[in-house]
Length: 80
Image (cartoon, rainbow, N blue to C red; front, side, top):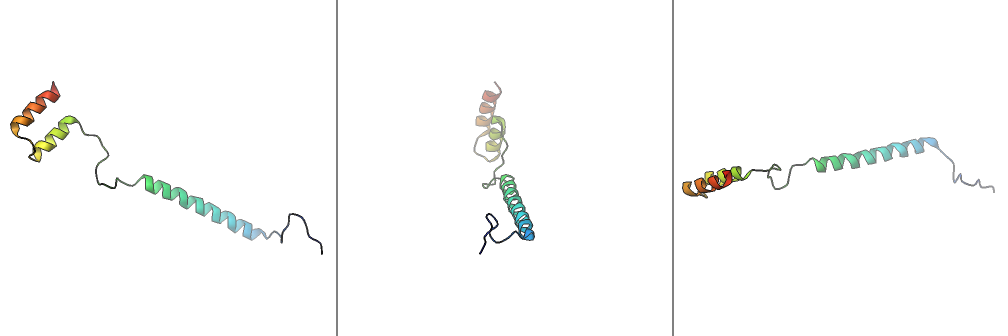
């Protein structure tokens, strides 16, 4: 029996091509999954933007957490 070094059962090229396509599909799915995860909105439903101190103050006043006097006093402090 004669064995050819490095041939290990032959090179049937269609299987090499199918393997290459499979590897491309695998990496495309991995990259698409990473992009999808990065683009998801925050899980807590909060916005990712920053609010100014005056915006927070107005929100607290609108919710009824502050009286008008407290609101005006804090607003004056912020604008000073």
